Picture 1 (cartoon, helix red, strand yellow):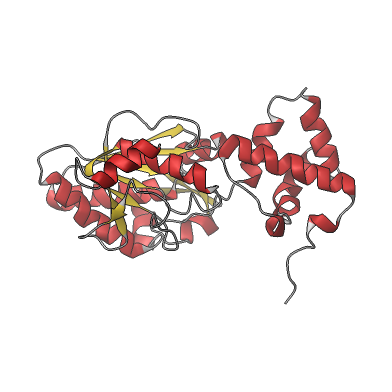
Picture 2 (picture 1 turned 90 degrees about the vertical axis):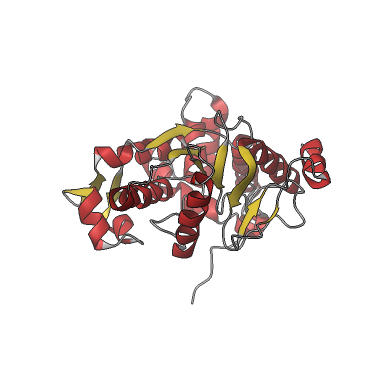
Length: 292
């Protein structure tokens, strides 16, 4: 089996300069870091952009970036370098637990709000919309307000359009739901307008921007913080903690944890794999917010 391309540290000095500029741009815009052993991703991720601009090397792309005459090139580079890996109903057990968690919040007699932070091209929030719309049809239970954000304007545009390839639609989406909530359009599938309207999509930079207004009962931030520096992660955790109601839940990826990284959250005692803000007035919560 062949491995990844050789590290760019073995490339020419000019190529190393290009690597430094591109990784610095990504970190400045999003907080995400590309370590030296992962720098081969630059070549892979940016090849389509090179072809589109009829360029041969990353150095030529960096030259265009530094010239400053093209206002959108920086956005396109960052969009290409972001990891937008996602799928419908990713980690199905998480969605099963979410139904129970939302029902628990509804029992307190208030309208429930969910924030999908780092939603990429929209599969996660649209999965939530389908799940709770079907629950509403079966039981009459209210549909929670769903807000979905991502740092990539291109990803948010795709999410709002609700258009997915055959490959994307088949990843995690049962045929029954595909036929119920999507219409075929050539080789693509397009979400029905009533489904997309259940989600408020907006561009938001978790590292630099405040959270959406109001407070949420659940925040999903799955596999988003993996490549952030420790200090940046703590700031994002603090932002999410302030956006949650007391006792609100944070859902992270299966390989992620808050333990040892922030005092703003602790493992949920009821929902396995979820995290919650400590009770109001606790020393843990006070310390966590002071650290922000």
